[in-house]
Image (cartoon, rainbow, N blue to C red; front, side):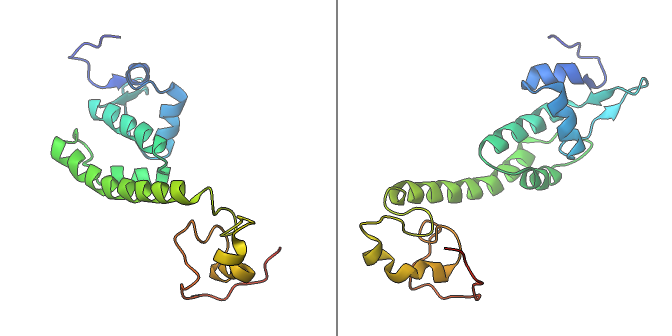
Length: 165
């Protein structure tokens, strides 16, 4: 869909076509505060060109596993009322780069440990007596303690309540 350059504000249908998002998704992202379209004289939503980039960023960040609250906080750091510059996007990307690097390291560790240790900390039945004697990992907290980076030597910060099992 071609859009005349002299049109003030972009209609939601054009933004949907350009981003690949449905109109309802764009409206949802608006209610979540991720974009803030204006209104034309007829009350219809009108978007800035920068909103196409914002919505594209939302799509990518969600695919990478980031939640809407994290995405909103990042977008709130971008300027309102003007299209973000390359420097604005670079600053935003640097913060996400660190989080992506941490996620990648966690995924790599998970990939290496997953076949031998999953669930409560160590459910490899033929090795539990060696790596998790007497279910010592349970003292570290709920969940897959070894996959979360804990070891049996880790200090216990909080008392655990009764646990099922």
